[in-house]
Length: 408
Ligand SMILES: Cc1cc2nc3c(=O)[nH]c(=O)nc-3n(C[C@H](O)[C@H](O)[C@H](O)COP(=O)(O)OP(=O)(O)OC[C@H]3O[C@@H](n4cnc5c(N)ncnc54)[C@H](O)[C@@H]3O)c2cc1C
Image 1 (spheres, helix red, strand yellow):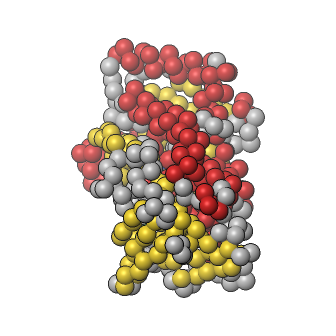
Image 2 (spheres, protein in one colour; image 1 turned 135 degrees about the horizontal axis):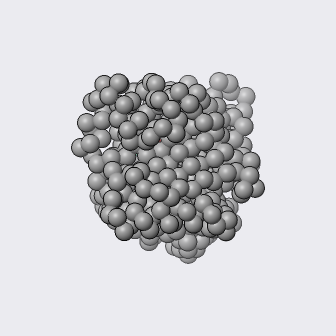
Image 3 (cartoon, helix red, strand yellow; image 1 turned 90 degrees about the vertical axis):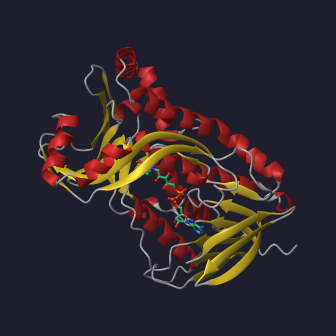
């Protein structure tokens, strides 16, 4: 078989682009197929909390210093509504310069895409606004970034995978030794349904300002309705307010004054009065776990396509980035004849299992244990928060897990 490519990455989102960057400089023939058109900036409204571990990985990918609009998190304050018990984590207790960083999704996406484009042609500037099919030769390898390319078909064969995609209404097909599905989880969902836990919650996200912002401090407040997070960003906070779907839809429709008042009632006084609120957007939330076993030969799932988590612990992208890094190492270590083989993919999955399972369990437990008002559970939660606050080894264990994952 003439494979065409060694690696084809379906989806040039933050995780797919990170994988492509981790593989640059190799001798592999790689393509990234991204559905968004070449000039389209990402309009995604969410902000992401990046862990300190992700900073280290983005630094290795050569992207960290080019990120714009990054706000550091130095302190995390965790509490629950209508109950005692709280925990505060400080960066210096954990011997790191910052616990994490807040960045808008489009800023992260742009930096990764620009780095990819820069790889394609270091002399071209500005990086965006270029052609639909850009490529670079590296060593004897080749990297192609194909935009406006919506993948519609994927089939695993004995020694390769076949990808069908549409670009400008025309159909194309390519073969690859390994197809990496990093599309966020839609392409294979019907054929190989993921395990889904519907939390019945949506996340309302927006930017707010307040009268007494606390510099570099993030707040996570658990309420019976669902968790609420304030992530420090610029002069205010990125708000992630989870609530049952119907309630979240109603919150979208409130006028600004009512929204700010209700937020104050819900969150309390820790940052003073809420002053302004920007455009509000809602995301339905759930846990989606794709089957562990690669559903087809020569195919692997990455990032949200492999697992989609509730944002309560800010783990989704951080885990996807670790997926991308570990997969890049497995690819670079593989002998030519092993690339995309079941043995190679089984070893990769085994390496990722502990981190993936622990991240899923941690996030899922937080949502389920902290989103109710049963008195006994509330007392247990208060005790858990107090233990987290008072016992340094517990604090270090939890913070290390959140920053570096279970393999870190
Ligand atoms: C409200 C909210 C808050 C969050 N907060 C955090 C946080 O604080 N920290 C954190 O770590 N994570 C957070 N997450 C999770 C994080 O957003 C995801 O884990 C991350 O975006 C996953 O990246 P990805 O590249 O796997 O998928 P995506 O971001 O979904 O990107 C997929 C890419 O594939 C492309 N694509 C899709 N279909 C096709 C196709 N058929 N053909 C070609 N291309 C295709 C898309 O255009 C897109 O570019 C949050 C999520 C939500 C909803």
